[in-house]
Length: 196
Image (cartoon, rainbow, N blue to C red; front, side, top):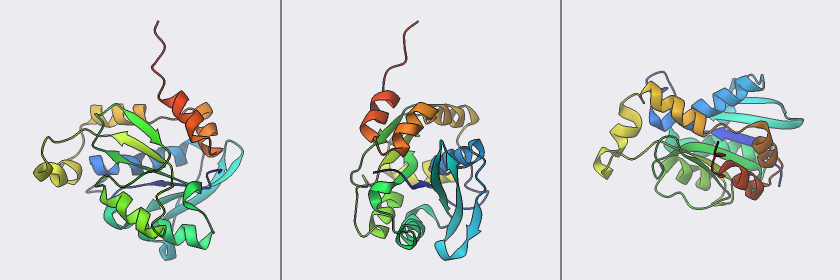
């Protein structure tokens, strides 16, 4: 099923802008800039929403203005209003299961302890069938340090750049994602780099 909405998860405000929890939001803002899509505040959707042409397709971009753990309020409102199914929504977010510099696409699944995903699933009437872009941010080593690691400190510039580079979908990969061919996009995106 073709993708009609792309969401980037992150906490609002400058205090969180450079934290690990905001790599999904940063990725979405970069995508909006790349395709010249302006995001504007839509209070009824609890987010910044934009609409534009991405590789010949009509796509909406959403940056929830709630905290990450309430992201589903924005995603659910937009999906309900525009009659979108979970399979038509791509969600980009921070993934502690991967080191910085590793990003992966995934077709669907559970929340794996990510409160933002938990909220999105709830906002989509418990439908877990949305594709995801999981952007590796590494793990602090212990669960007690997780909140501070994700939201309390800025991610070093070199790590932010490595995360952004790993999550960069070229036109070919993005084309497959937008077509809903997540398997094809995964094969391309997860392929090892060519050896010289």
